[in-house]
Length: 425
Image 1 (cartoon, rainbow, N blue to C red):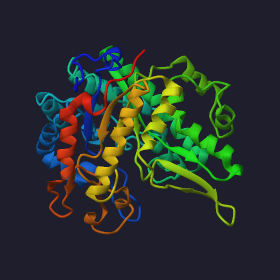
Image 2 (image 1 turned 180 degrees about the vertical axis):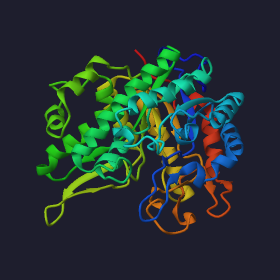
Image 3 (image 1 turned 90 degrees about the horizontal axis):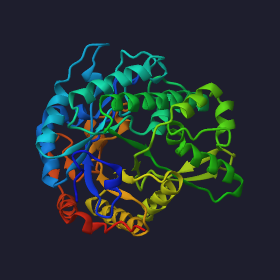
Image 4 (image 1 turned 135 degrees about the vertical axis):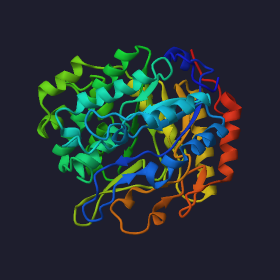
């Protein structure tokens, strides 16, 4: 089986024959301009997807995939509070269904509508995002059963609350935790709203995965804490953060309230699927001290075994079905091909170990524009990141197929044989 069932059940997708191949189109939406450049970051606009959506969805169909992670621009669907324009999701999601491709709908990918003042820290955010999710799910009730409430909660909290680059522009660990708590509450309310529309809807929780290491014994404790932070959003929404949690005291020290943490235990949601976003050039983190004592985090390029390490780590902690929800390498076609081969081989190893790795997503389907564009001053063509199956012409925005297209088509056509049966019993 290479496609999702019409009415998906977790038990069916953890059976030995279960596996799906997927792809996706980069859909970062940051609607607030960078002060010194005036630039926003709308990947659909920068890559021409708003105009070429029909062509792009046909490219996905040509891969043979029966699943795609696909993002909806909330800021366009609801350009002003309570003013709804469902034209884009109606056309795009409807077309995917016509093509026989089941969308895993990405509801929020970092950015929010600008009218939501204070962004994630607006006290109405959880209810507003739940209202939006409910409206979209209602339009596709009985046809779409897969939704990601919010892509990469930890990265969102990092850029919005720790670095202060994205709204609401908070800084430090207290800002990180404030944004993370708000995001997590919004995820819970979104899942509740989706299941109120249709109890058969399953949430696909997708977050960035980091794997920390350090050669310095003095930094071992910091490395362990950073690793726990990687799991924080999943632990919060599933009600795992209690007094015995390794981050309990740290959370309280940086502004979390005991009553807020108790709310998550009282409103805990299931984790039917966990999506792992991992990249060989970003995911491995090495902690070390510089000569002057400053903590530095390096990102060495990781081997394909990274996938196996993370799969084992997440399975041991959550026991949920897992899938690679984003992966690619940046660079030459040959480099991308090596990563495809190595990462898929690692997925196969996990399945032989009995770890329910049930899917693989090459992301992005075609090249994206690097996030540095928003804060940069050069022409957008200078920020194109070569990561796709198709290359993106930096001037015309034409999608040019690389040999990776044929490689991925072969994997998809091979179905389960490319990754083997899941060991059970």
